[in-house]
Image 1 (cartoon, helix red, strand yellow):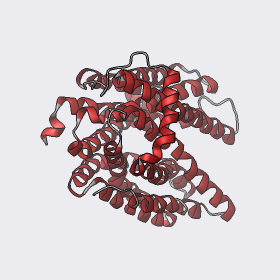
Image 2 (cartoon, one colour):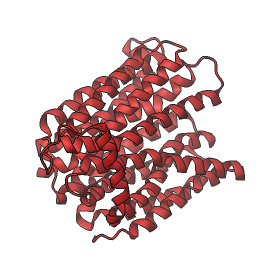
Image 3 (tube, one colour):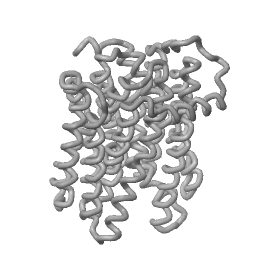
Image 4 (cartoon, helix red, strand yellow):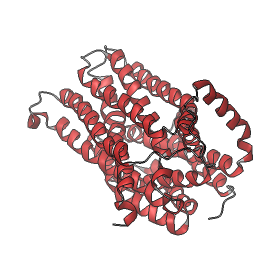
Length: 416
């Protein structure tokens, strides 16, 4: 293993991805929607539970999108990015674990806890991303960023595998039903997230601000700085164009992630195959993300993103022809090869473009775009599917986002 990967600070930083990816996979992607539509449901129609889930996701994302840049300004001024990770992680861990105690039919209580847990997850990630510059030098950004995503894929997949076994065979674990196993899975995610967050808090240094720490930075000061940043962003041309490109293509990536299971179900595929495909994507994503980190270090992060997005375009073109389970597995495998690559290299490329001493603030904007990015793609696929009567054309429309992102990425004025 490269000395970069073996440093205690890098391991501690990357283990946070290992820690909280379990929430994204087990809770957000898999089991929370299932319990919300069944065990926690109050006999509402499926469209109502979909509405509840959609608005809880949207509301939590909007809160993080609005406040992350402001909190980032405060964290930069006070030199407290690691403290902010700890705060948001504590919220996420406690609220996720609390889902274990939600009784049958209590959908509103479940929604509130889930939204708070998601705020903890997304808010913590904003400050976690900004700590990349504390553990790696410019030349190491690509490999270290990819290492974090790789451990995230592996850690999330390992716990999810255990959780799936619990749900499919609850009697093996002394549990009565699959619903009880899912509730225990939430508790396991909370414990996993909390335990593996400790290395970041102990091993990752909090780099002092370029200027003297401003202990008096207030929330109002943060808003003033954010407004000033928005007004002056035109002076950072490379940064502005990259953020626009990122907004388009990451919207495509997130749309594929969020719509894949629904699309698979619409093609008549079994839920068991879809869950297995999710696991496949994550297990493949572990070595693939590391490989993309090495590739980015050798040929440049932008060229690595070009390769990943080109494969996404090919996957989107192939998606309308999915009719058998092995087709879906093939696409899941292919996505696993590039999903971590496009995310990790985007993070490392962006880290190089940020003005010195403003990493938490600008990573707040970066993650804000990530939250808003999940809006256009699903809306586009839904509208196209509704107007044409074809879900195949709906998923094909995502290609517009990837092509727009590729075009704008080429316009970023940086040297490869």
